[in-house]
Length: 271
Image (tube, rainbow, N blue to C red):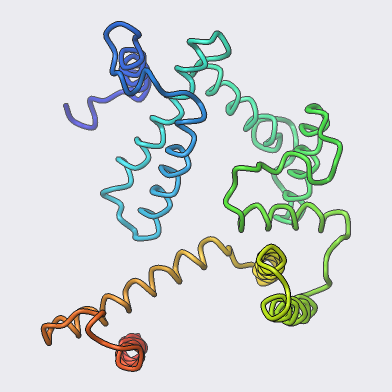
């Protein structure tokens, strides 16, 4: 079957049917039958990260498969909910469709599209505030999901607080706070116990997330790219040692640090 022959609605219906068969108590897959919301949730998060990874690597040929894996997670959760009489896939699709229409009155309603990006953000937040009020989320920080990656959640918490004026004026003040938190971390390392040390380290990470926000940097993306860079350069070290028939454990820090600097210099020269 070619791409032109495929119908999105029919393929989604087929996927929903496959998931129902996998969960059938009598004829389904034992592993799928044993799962519940809690056991599947980590896979949902993992698949979302794999989508982000494919995009980061610009692996466009892999992206349909990764998005399909993520879609499976939605179908899996919806099937389990349907079995309990809670909701089904159609309810999920209807919920997001209704939300998108409600949040875009300038597209689907009578509001004018002739507004600045800043005004659109302001209107968006006003609409979301109405939604939170409907969920009895009265607090400024209510509704920020606990399951988010910690750095992402830190930024969202800080953004919420900033809307009501609880924020530093700019990055300079955040940098001063980083210096303060770094000094407190050193003090905890030298004189306090492991719990206090962890708390101070957490405080420093939280302020670093705030710096990213003020610099308009996504800290999760920045750290992913730093991880990629570290992996690339360390593999260069391994390759250099392998050319001599050695492994990293056969080397020492001074040699590997030199090879690291060489890899770094080669990257900069190639830019």
